[in-house]
Length: 244
Ligand SMILES: [Zn+2]
Image 1 (cartoon, helix red, strand yellow):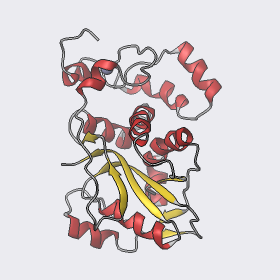
Image 2 (tube, helix red, strand yellow):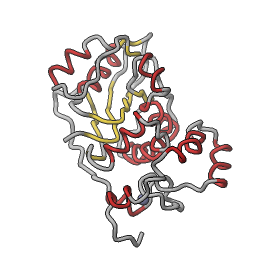
Image 3 (cartoon, protein in one colour):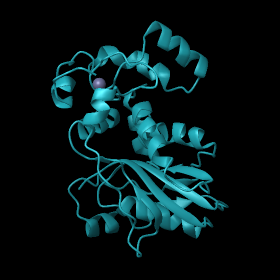
């Protein structure tokens, strides 16, 4: 893409694109109905979620220019004390990724979900082929009801489809914990103690737990503990971004 602007400048150059007018059309695209999605693309061609530029194959939701500018970070192998086989987050939780994740969660900008899923599908390609289930980190029912959706489900569903494995949602958040923002790892661990519970056995070899952002990692670890206690052999973590 021949554009001298940075991703931040491009992002702010399209304020209308990030406004309410775009939401209705994009919510249609989240229903996973391929026919409606294709029709939607004819009526409203796909545009880069960050700058609004029309995208062309093989680009879909993020143009090549913005993709080049995303704050990518390495994901080193997990420590031996980690419950995870792989612990991967391709992006740093920094602008414009942090703004996009907040817009997805708190402003219902659901058009970011397939773009993030696209990034996770690419990241999942580096994981072993024995993954046989994808599990989004659950929200408490009250927060899900208030928000109208669980962003981890919206991001995880296309990943499960891409890997041809089931999307498993049989772990639930049984306690409505306060927002984790501003808490350190110890406080988060205390906050999340017994927050998750599995309904029944999880007879999977390798469960891939998906979330939007990894801050301290405590949430993922708590879900991993419950998933393993319920019978899963191995667990890995995959998120869009990590706070570093
Ligand atoms: Zn772009």
